[in-house]
Image (cartoon, rainbow, N blue to C red; front, side):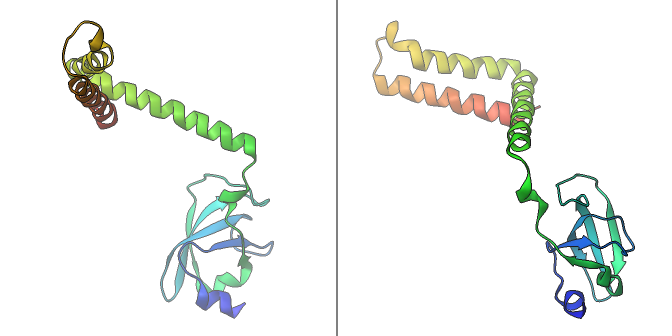
Length: 150
């Protein structure tokens, strides 16, 4: 497979064959030079996405034991995709809350601005545009403090 040896580039995906020097699976090219190719294992033998962290470097001559493959990121079952999103979302919420807890007084002040801006028309006789500005200032404060963390 000489064209594979010369045309390989970063982010290409390769599948190892049975007679290959590495474990069967799908590998992403993460580095190249004139003599070697560095690969990251990103899929199992069936082409499903896995996270192994296995990085290896092979000589270009060893690429005869590989064939082009599809990116395994696109073939995750819908249930895994939704589950992964919900898990990531949960971690993001925890990190956001940790950011707010890291600066409690500033977070409390930002939340107070949100409340005053949203409910201030009930007790304050100020222009509505002022309350809108206070509200958005509080929202931006909460977002900044939560995203910034400790």
